[in-house]
Image (cartoon, rainbow, N blue to C red; front, side, top):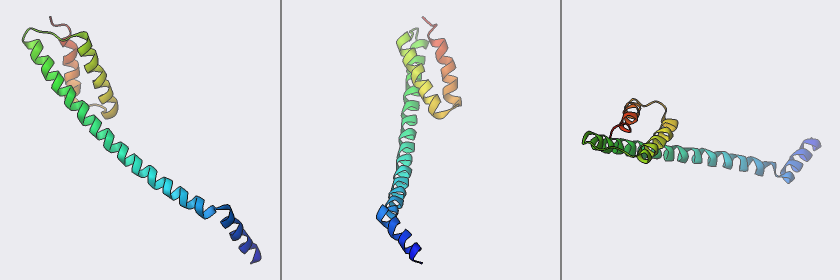
Length: 108
């Protein structure tokens, strides 16, 4: 019995309960940060998707009216598409627009 008391005393002096409390706090904090990160990712995906679709329709209209898009515009659109695709995975609407964007650069 004295040995058990001694072990509990030593563990208390070493701060074992404090370490456990700290681990619980860290786990809760990490869970909150992961939830916040997921919210930021969802917001980022929405903004990128909106910008991609808006720019696509602008470029499509320009090309249909005899204009063209610059290589820089195409490159910037493709970079955003790749970032969105990495976050989201396959997306039928934007995958279709991606294929059509490849044809825009060939138009005068």
